[in-house]
Length: 215
Ligand SMILES: *Cc1c(COP(=O)(O)O)cnc(C)c1O
Image (cartoon, rainbow, N blue to C red; front, side, top):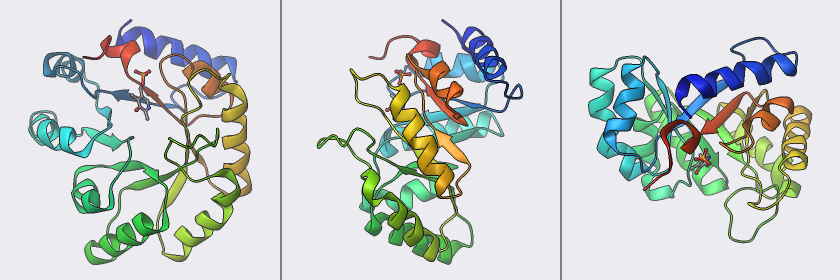
């Protein structure tokens, strides 16, 4: 696969769902990829990337950004509170808000600086004990808490359980976003992004299908 092929599949999925071409943002997930592969995609003109770890992103994106202006990088992996400031400065969006303490820390940083990355709340739709994310039953209260802190919550994010049919998880996330008046839906990866688009994804996070297997 390549970026061009994935983009073509995404356009088809948008069309099949009667959604405007380009209405879904393709986040090219560059975690654990060698710099040459990432640079090749930047050279093709692509400018929207996702990273899983603050440290890894801090090591590679400041230099790439200087060489390729207009590049956006989103944090899609878990965020420890003690890395919140670094993440706040490094990323254009954070997809993994999942607890009050982190929300409070980001709210303080936003107040100090007068700006804030776009924020997505991660929901643990499969209620998996080892997985990050707010439990579905706690979501509405957490959205209200974030709003009370003036955080710019744009939408919800989920990672369905590995061996499950992702469709019911995407449907659940869309329903929860709708009832909370949130327009963003970050869902769908290499193996299921077309299903996610059919369920209303606004952001799909695709790594290995674009860049190849990770190290
Ligand atoms: C790694 C990762 C992806 C991309 O996974 P692929 O299967 O390589 O497309 C998407 N979302 C999150 C949260 C990830 O950690």
